[in-house]
Image 1 (cartoon, helix red, strand yellow):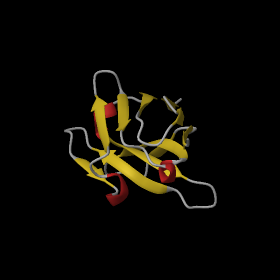
Image 2 (image 1 turned 135 degrees about the vertical axis):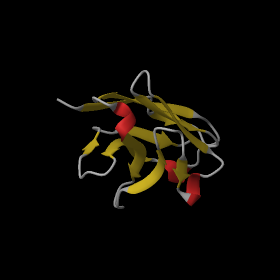
Image 3 (image 1 turned 90 degrees about the vertical axis):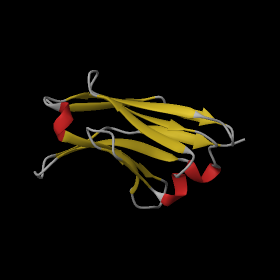
Image 4 (image 1 turned 90 degrees about the horizontal axis):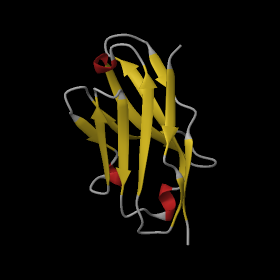
Amino acid sequence: QVQLVESGGGLVQPGGSLRLSCAASISNFRLYVMGWYRQAPGKQRELVATITSNGSTNYAYSVKGRFTISRDNGKNTVYLQMNSLKPEDTAVYYCNADKIGTRINYWGQGTQVTVSS
């Protein structure tokens, strides 16, 4: 059974940092593009960042220069380092695994990030 388990969310002041982790119980982890998405109250889920197995990354314009996605293929884990956090970054952050060339796609349960003073 595939599981994506996120951790690292919480409450942080504006300008602060958080590091999210997503541990994936997936066979052939390298075959998946891993991503982070977020959903704020009353808004649609949106892409934050993605990373391929060889490290190619893609970021939403709103987080470029502040967030960094990375992965450890040996640990089946993807990370999201979030710096210079803003109140508008407040959302539930979801981990996603998308198997290349297929329709196989998995979601984690989400972790809450709240940026507030």
